[in-house]
Length: 575
Image (cartoon, rainbow, N blue to C red):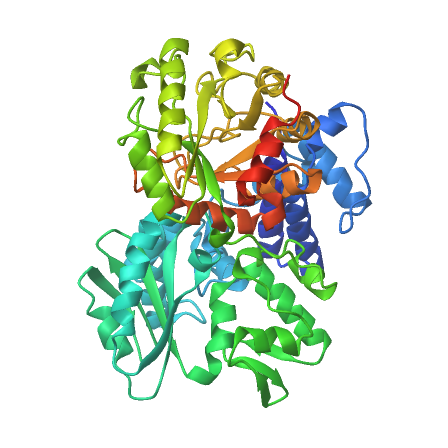
């Protein structure tokens, strides 16, 4: 079984969890946490490199001992230390650490005194009233833990970003009408534009004697009030998503917004930076001793630490703080930078609107050009185009382009990459198109070497200009196919092919990690809607959010260029 970087990172994180439960040296625990983060973000395949007989390069934060563990993990998916730690602990005990109010000391006490080693066992013990007899627990703690474990087990589902927006934005609008509310922000992973959102974190700045909590719990979609106090509350909505609220005075909004936006790793790194300066930062502000010196805005918190404001999408402790110190933060792409869309479907195949309707919708969204890229013939279930039908569509689109004002229509196709890497349509018709978008739509389970070779061969085709949804994943539905993405990106660079960032919330493919890989290799990314209807261009905002998480700037994005620049790139290297 292949061992990927993500597997190695997960194993290192598990080692850190189990060491923490043993009350190991915190510096040792932190070393494994850092190693997990580094391994998960490496731009090369660790196991593949080692299998070729190459050594790991020197990586800051990875010493000789950790490098040895990584080599062992890459070879067999586990290591002697992890095996030993797992043998000495119940399989589900690390899940307990993820509950609020349960640190390593309490988890050890639960296990040693009551034999609790899983969330289910904790839930049974709390229901039976067996926790309250333990030192440091009591009846209230028992009830809080019971509520916490019940909430944890019931909120395992994560919501895709666009779906979460349907719950978050109306709720925020409702809260803005609360007497005394001054500003309402949805923080957490939603603000960081994560692909999926576990719960909604609302932050409201308000004057004293406000009615924010009352309005929050009275929202029509609330099905259960989990907690309600003077400044915070938690509810569960009818959709199953949990919403948490924190009310803060206006002077603390910036500090609270930073704190509740996260990520946890970013906040920890920033607190460490504050301590080095003799300062303390928390949700109430940034302090020198008892004196509060910043916190009304996020920018003031960063400025007090001699840093520029860092966009929320970058706050993952993935080098953003170091880049900020060097003055090297990227000027991230914005939705308004997009000039066009190169992946759009019509009712000629599986779309719902005509080419004219799609063009007019794109123009209404402020786009200057759009490519019609219906499916090719292999997609029989959606009536994919053969060469004859595509030729007819090309003529129709060229005629329509001459008629329309304020939008340019480009001819294109989303052509299937067949199992052997060849394309689903002949060159004689593909050569007539402005843009050929190649895509894998079948045989997702090919072995890594064959899948990679298949895609590399397609990228070698002189007419291919764009690789659609490069990993083939559907979030929470289908895993990415097993492919050497670094090899794909480097082939794209060599052949002048761009990689799509498909903005469909089910896809968001490229991932943020692969966006950074493409940027590092000098490969342009194209943020496309893959719209199948006239209202489908709205998802471009999700794609831009993903691009921002991947550190992409306007210059890194193909369709942020004007039409003249786009045409030059599309025509480059044609033969």
